Image (cartoon, rainbow, N blue to C red):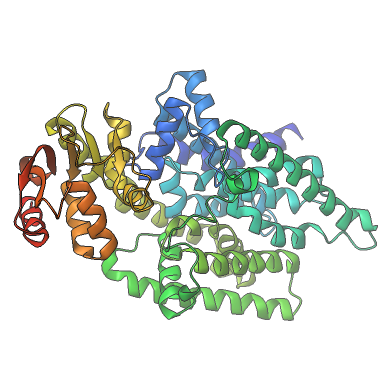
Length: 511
């Protein structure tokens, strides 16, 4: 018995140890703007409780304080821990489909070898912990009898790591509610109700604590739903329910499995769409025939449908959201392989597939991410070197976060957010017409907004450059080296017209 338990522990740990050991030395040199904003919050202890991913930053902050590790490393340790949890949960779930030791290890390895899992193991993002919690909750819900005292915290963690995982409740109930033949009502539905109630209670307690710390002018529900109600046009659009939206969704999902370059996006979307259609059709037919693993098939199909329909509406172009759907796709794929003749699921063939997938994702994705900090880092450091001290800086979101984390600059404004504030009458300083104020605008960001050429952009630019139509003057402009940015002020100068000033701004901001 002891030897069998040790062998099982080794089987469970093998894929995780190999991958975590590898990824520990391949951490990404580049981080997403959101990831850097989390790292800034880890360092400062401010703005830690984001309702969309409630506990990610506080846990990283605790690791940072306990170990003294820098904020990015502290957050990545959190991600690597959850990578190991994902491996253990994947091994347990593979055991529902395959009985052989090697098959279960290779199945777990296939999940870990996907591009999405690798990317989010080495980047400061919330998606990987959320996926690991989904897998853990699924593994616990598939056990009979269901243990609410274990499953409820796991379910709560899925929501606390990513708010959209409230969607997981519907497929989870389908998985856990059925009891064994002849079981009492409590063995199925009663345990499900207790689990959901306990999980909801835990989530509300943490949200209440976060609200008490962060506060919100609109109250508790405004804080809780702040992301859902954010005035961002790209979020939540029924226009995405179209061939174009489906194409975006398909390529986003494919990019969570393997690299798809921009030039092959159309091909990737077609291949993924056909694969999704075939996979779903296969399992619907097997369910109709009452094939084995009926409940697990239903659970995975409902999981996939609920999440894909929601994220098709929310934002199909953002690949981050399609890491969660790797789990039902992986489960449906395993069951499909088990349905096929034995020759198609031989361990040597599976080992080749997993090795090629892992190697390809490391060579074409993780390796470049490890070596290249990205253009935003270079621009942020260049602006820091050349801009005067103590100025107000206006940049794009990516450069803003690079500057806040990697430089000592604190007065850095994200341009589009600043524009919304200005147009709403909530400018962060009295106005650029005040003599003596110096403002630096990031060159690439300025070129981007000049291309929009709309009324709101024009109003923001007029405010930014201190244009006075009556006096025919504006703040003095000059370019930083290589047009990394423009310096506004101090002083005033005469201009012939707004159109002439825009032409001058364009000329100065050329690279």
